[in-house]
Image 1: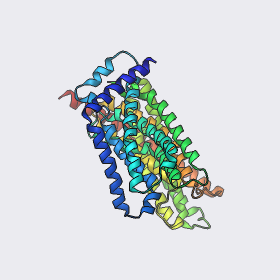
Image 2: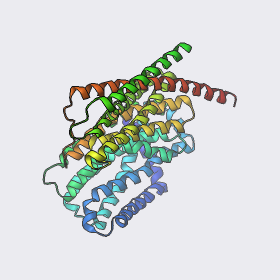
Image 3: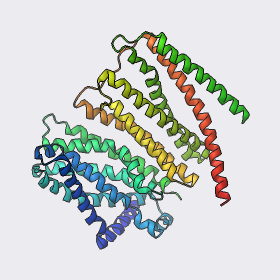
Image 4: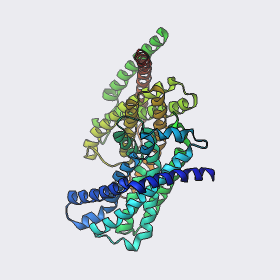
Length: 225
Length: 223
């Protein structure tokens, strides 16, 4: 309980900063929409084609946008040496990881809440009948993305060239999660006669659980000075 | 030091001789595959290279765990050496596989689970080497690298499984055929030869890493 309370304090602090500046969220939504636009230009105006690949487009958009948010995860701590302050607080350092993780999940889900309807309009997809299934896949995928992302962001925050290093480490690790999320989303959107989406959702759940355990376990080592 | 150096040289000679014998047998002695012909001889370097890559990354994983437990830079040097060798042999595996794939499958590349996983594995360990090159402090570098080494290795089977699912929804994955004992023995001999090469390269690379570490320390000490 104590751990959750500490984590929540960090989530609250970060969300408050974000709510007062609104820099990241607005930029991220705009960036995500632009990614969808660029795909539409790259693949041509063929709506049928766009609809078929929309699951992939959405998740590439989420991954690219998510990288922006992840790179900023520890920025507010970094600029004024705040990470030292967090580190010397009594209590489990895992609270920092959990707090940053929840924060990233919340922000990314908020972006997706705009991105999915935008995709529905741009690609002319009927999303409303499947809204709960889609939300489920989006939540599972976002949790997986954020777990690995928040973890690797802590590793790369002190590096030179961290903007390059984070995606370099993150994207290979995310392959199972991306495969699961893209396939589940596509099957939900274009129809799933063989009931194949279950296996992808199970993959997402397994990915989330495995990496949550590994990440929370190793995080104190990553944070050491 | 001289003792170790002599051992390394001996292993190097053994590696060279076994490589020469293995290549000679693989190229000229063993009869070619009935269906594929001489192209199949690529197997005698392709499979050992792949084996070596996996061995090297497993060593990276073990050494990463050891480092995090004991915090001795000695383990980090071994992990670093093994990762470099592993990356080289993964590239070799992919290149040889590609050359083999073109005449037999008709394509340089296909999204087969093993191919795809190998390519992603390469990306994981290139990331491992990249994070090392961007960190200046030896202890931090070792710690971060060890974390990437552990998570990266844990990820490989998950990637493999997910790619199998991804592909089998479309087509069955390629399966190894039963092989004749003659081919099998040649293959095993070549695997042994490659393992000697690995041990030899490791000994040399670890020594080099040690010298590099000392140099780094002196440069830091002298400002």
